[in-house]
Length: 308
Image 1 (cartoon, rainbow, N blue to C red):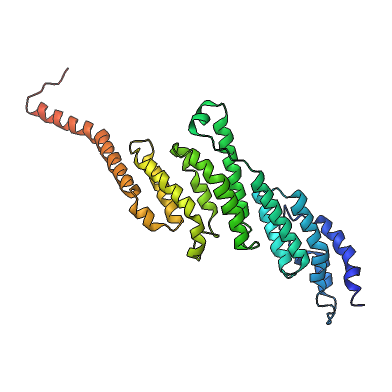
Image 2 (image 1 turned 135 degrees about the horizontal axis):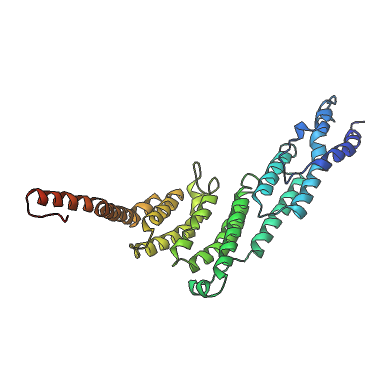
């Protein structure tokens, strides 16, 4: 009887899970009828694994199909829902289970294929400025790479750190994104978009509780930011330099490179630009007032006669 209970429940579970949409909603099993009814079964030594058995034999195959054939790896909403569903089945089924191993394998393959098939152009600024829509296409592909990076990082509680490093850092960041950014580093306004990539590292390679061992993998990003800093230092009179310097310094701080942020000339450059802006403000706003006061004094002394 104990061996037949999962087989009896399975058709009813499968019927209710037809409404389960793990890519578009965060639904917990505890809110479903099959879970409530199976939990009321009098447990004995053979039946304590009823719910885990049903999750492994019914729910995981559905989730595996959704991730394999329906999941848009560039969609943040679908990825967040898929992460929720995967963590949900992890609660009931041990990670050593063959069903879980197959699920994670399919997940890694989907992400690996997405990275391999993504093309982020490495055209120089001359091509971007002369070929129609080249800059727009390059910006679009860079945006796709940012979305993919963020979505990969969302799996940080599911995939091992070694898998995350290979997918996100080795294959995507070093293999696709940094070559694109290096090709446009002379255009500082476009290159500063690196901050979107740095922001996606939060909670995985940056942020509280992250050890130095993980941060070493981000050294190529730090090196690129220092190149941007030198480019910015050579253009102190460039429009918006002060704001760009602050954004660049913030990225170094987010990457825990406080020494680089202090030793670079970005702080000095930011202060210099602030002083220049203050002088310009005083000149524009106070000079007319000074001239007016001086004119009034000359009128009072009879040195200057105003026009009637």
